Image (tube, rainbow, N blue to C red; front, top):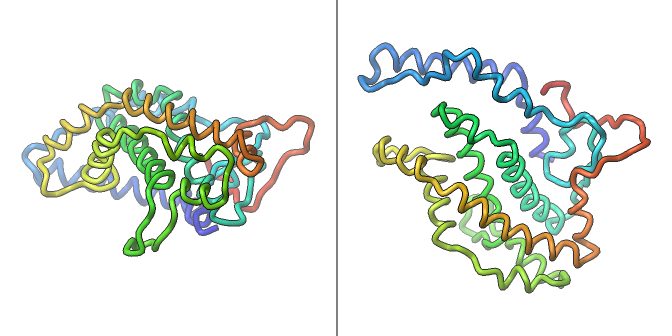
Length: 257
């Protein structure tokens, strides 16, 4: 439940402090900290916020099987009782977050604003890497978070029906490596040893459509395995509307959007 506690620390106060810090940094840059500073046009564009107005969450009561479902109003969610469920929810959350962002068209709508498009691609990259890591990769004991099996390993040990289909899935290792490189140098972290122009070129050349196609192929196999076992089938009911019930309240939800 630490995830929920951290999520709920994001509120008007924290966002105000962060946005004010960003404004101060831009001001320092604009007054001589660097001779190459160009103020991003979206910072002075009154229409910028309109781009995000249709991204509000649905208001009807639904079932949610992702990790953050319990933080959303009017949502009935699964509480994981072990790593089998929790890890599956991690992978599902990465799939859903990537898919929802792609379907929103936000990347295309923000393509003429550098910072907004970069932020969108950053989210897509980080979610894709989370999916690769949690689904396929065994986390070593030397990791700061400790050793942990991949979801494939967990499903194999639990004899999930049909798991061989995803074990035998042909991964595009080169594409995964390219996505990890973007994450490690410019999305989740900024590599100070790589010139900014090179990082920007990497971002502009990012193969978003190829990644979208690849994740769709992984999802197809993942969903087929989920359908085949009674212990995983329920994860596919995400977003199912619930009709004829009273409003749902949760202490995990803050009255802040």
